[in-house]
Image (cartoon, rainbow, N blue to C red):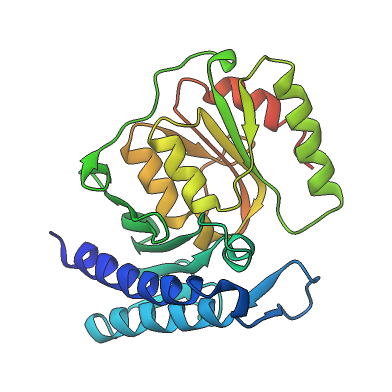
Length: 265
């Protein structure tokens, strides 16, 4: 196992242990509104403590590497050695006792994803990907679904915290998708896990019109290593920055692009 993947797994499990301990008493987890945000964009004490546990393990092994993390660590996305961390993705789910949240740790070298680990400790799920070595769910290899038509699949989507133009654009795209007889829409509240569901063949596609890099840094590699495709919603290479995102099984990518790009704000 490459040393970076070994540390990514150790760090993710350390964060997951913190998150699960707090989740067992979710109703009493302290949280506050993020500075400058509205009441529904919150950070909890579990987020902060999980990030600290993850960063501590990475720093101990790779003290010179840069770290980009959601709550307290900011780094140049172009750093040669970069760790991208989401200590708890799906904080609103977490704070309401819904067992759909992910701990995400990814390692990038010279701008390219090398390995990534996503855990959902509430369900005991582990998603691991390493460049050139495939994607694994709980130790078993996974691949995207072979569906080639929208009327064969479920579609996942996410809403960013904006409840203006981005929300309206997402609703418009969703209405058009229903016109293609998709099986249904799923909005599950944790982008890291939504991406894993594309890779595991449960969703044919997933899109969101604004997403931060820590939300997709590991998940995009998991999709790609499972045979899927990930771009922006206008078909460009995905930057390691806040952006829009489309992930599919590959077969549906051009069809989905035609829809999500049409409604892109």
